[in-house]
Length: 184
Image (cartoon, rainbow, N blue to C red; front, side, top):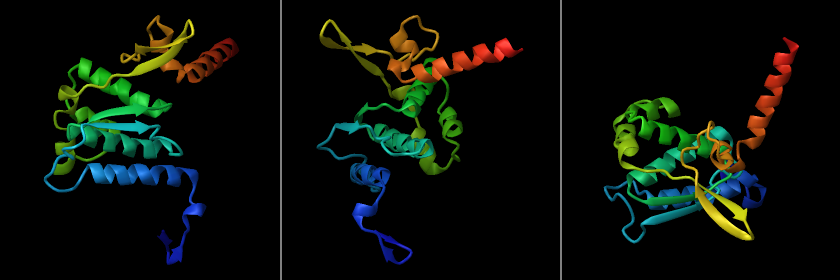
């Protein structure tokens, strides 16, 4: 890699750069800029923790790329520990359930409506589905549970706690609120 005329060897790249480059190259290969919508030989794209080493703002860019994959009719399977990706899945679930227009995505990602972004988002909410699953251990076995609602008000802890990913944030909020109220 060249930076301002200097060669930067791969060994000096950050962990995020090392993780992201193969993912970026995979996106580039799967989403050619030509009139070909997708690689015919591939129906599924499996991505393991695309958020590794990335800032939350960079994760938003990854989500936009995932939307591009969906718009090209790939089936995308993601394994993640990212609250940012789950926040997107939650918002998408709510938008779909409420029959919100694709305009909500422009606002969510803070991007302008251009011919390209309109084409990217067109019909995504109404025509695509995002399911969220949680893996848990019960009686020496691993089970999967559909937690797609990601409803913080659910009595089912797996759903309300987003499979455990929001547990600490929720607990911290509850405790800070308790002490803040006690101070008043």
